[in-house]
Image 1: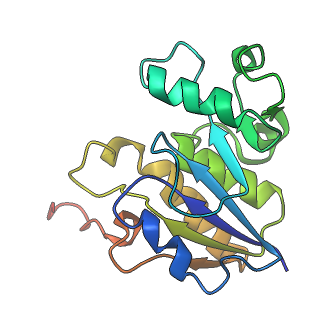
Image 2: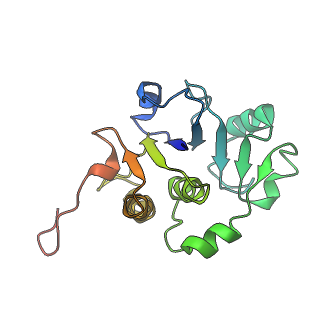
Length: 175
């Protein structure tokens, strides 16, 4: 069995340690976002921004360099000189499998990566893609991969207050 826990930096992030699969041998914990270090054990860290991106603060870059190891995964080739022991993920095959339209943010890319790695179940924590938040425009990607996983019979676990659980009212009634 392959279970993946994907942890963003939102309010429910620390609930990872309460997940029944946490620290089990078949579980992979994949972190995304810039809140470091996480207050729990993790297997991989996914960074999708290039080294000069504004969101990569000097402190975050120092942390990435200190952690430089195979378990730092990245999708931008320009990170390799800065993190020589890290692992480059060529998203070409993932893009061919799922397309690019819904690879809208780090969370969506992490979900696509886990699905591509044949995850049998996913737990999602710290994902604040709420309606009305600054991340609302990026919500389509995680929602798409959540629905895709469910359509394939892959179990999805989210905390009750996860932003992905918030339902948008149908048109024309608004929110």
